[in-house]
Image (tube, rainbow, N blue to C red; front, side, top):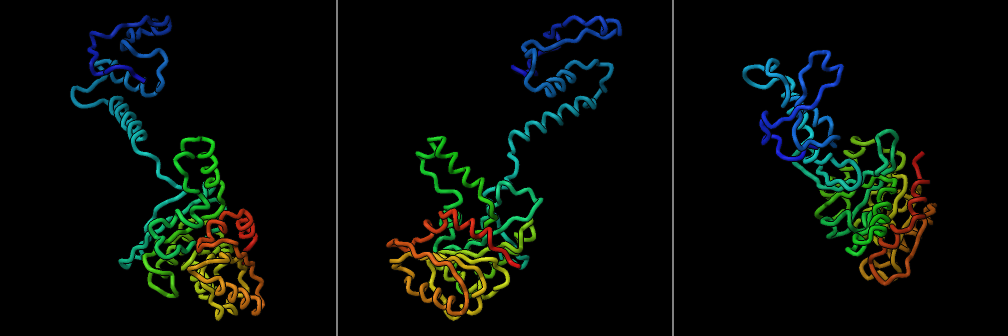
Amino acid sequence: MIEGNVAAHSPSALREIPLTALEAGAGLRKRPVLPGLRKRPVLPGLHRALHGVLTQPRSQKRRAGFTIVELLALIAILAFVIALVIPAPKNHGYLDRVYNDGLGTKQDYVLFVPHGYRGEKPYPLIFFMHGAGDAYRVAEVGLGQAIRPAAPEKAKRRAHLWQTILKKEKDFPFFVVFPRIQSLWDKDSADAQHGLQVLDRVEKDYVIDKRRIYLTGISNGGTAVWYHAAKQPQRWAAIVPVAGKGLPDLAPQIKHIPCWCFHGAADGVAPVADTRRMIAALRKAGGEPKYTELNINAHNAWDDAYSLPALYEWLREQKLP
């Protein structure tokens, strides 16, 4: 790296250094160097380029404009500066995206790309349906919170706690699609259809294991899991409804889909009795759903559900034939 202002040095300010015997024998001119240059510059390539421009003999320069050496040196300097100023595009972790269907409809979503993804092997994917009113923080509640817990300031100030949080995200082995829909996931709403179109787009853009695509949701999104599982029963390798309302009439259509359902025992928003009836209907139809009823006095069953390592181990075991 060059210290000081190079442009401030005039040719008369250059000092000369002795030539080696080999250079003297070849009739080479003595090589001037700039005062203040480090003996071993940090960026030798940049140093050589500048040195070449400043010390090139006049006989090799054109009367007007830049010489080739000067032009190449300027290009090298410009490329170096751009690389410092403009960060490389982010390809992993949480990515904010917009899907355009080409007909004027745009759908915002967040995509989580596993940090180990290189496009060489197919990865499993989880499609997450958020609850009512959660669109603005879709990747910060439920499954998103489990992947990367919201770090309080004290965790950021304590390096080992912050590194633990980041490691959890870096080790998460699933793609996750978080559509941001402004209404509800109920049945065939336009917003719900646009959200599902995002999944089609991601499957085209990335190497996704189509035999391991999972559907999950919380609250209103948890209710929608039952409906959309019945709508496309051959698409989902497993479903994980959390704190939604059961739809027992759909049980015969989805009895074959591996299911792990979660609900709080004292949920005051979505009565647990609805989920109990749904699980009973699935079992009556011949299904074998897993059901975890949490001993909590709240609607929020998702923090406990998505924090279970066993859930992700179970998901990875489920795949379409």
